[in-house]
Image 1 (cartoon, rainbow, N blue to C red):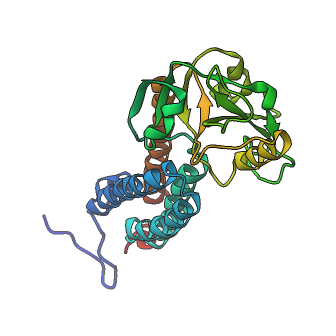
Image 2: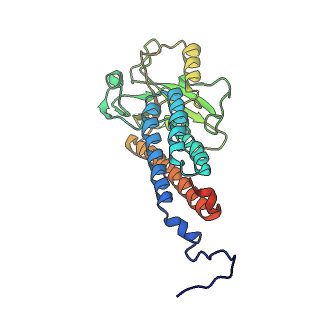
Image 3: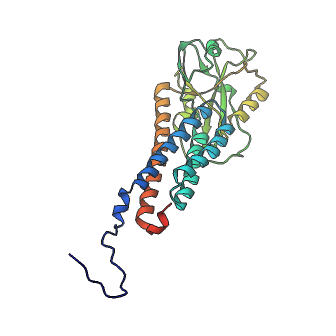
Length: 278
């Protein structure tokens, strides 16, 4: 059927898509797939570095790699470029600064505490003869770091076999933190009172100055530490703790992906169409 138009009248666009139809555009789904890939790349790269205790390198990689893959994920629009450049580094930084338990590595099985040096890559331990010598506890000397957990007081105490004496090098150290906001699960020193004889490996972060407390313990009590003596969280069930930390990591990744999808949907629905074109 022909449509008659008055002279000079612009043609009517009968196929103009509504805002909801923007959600089925290939460009949006390509951006969503790139965002998912960016979150995975950042997480897979930063997690091993954090587990090895290379915190500053993990922070550097989180910023540089996150910035690059974020720009790539949001290349279809100016707002997407900005959102990706902010979101992806933030995901990497959260992992690098909050992951203080080694979640990658084997278990030691039941071992004597003095054999711990034979398991340099183990993430979880069970001991046949170990206790936390709370009488040699030392704390950080000042609160110089930011963050909820790190703003608390970090403590360390020797983990020793039953026949240990202060003249013998300390084979391992238990770490804990006391914050102003109540107990923080296995990270609190209340676990030291339990006869668990199990631990997970602690990895240092930029926001957890447990090393300051360790230096004070060595100086105050005139102790010596064994070479490469690990720092441990004293726990009841190491596999459960590591599973919880992996769940936390999964939630960080899920939150990053969900935030990216919310941004894409919001941009498609709220931003004028001309502004969303690449």
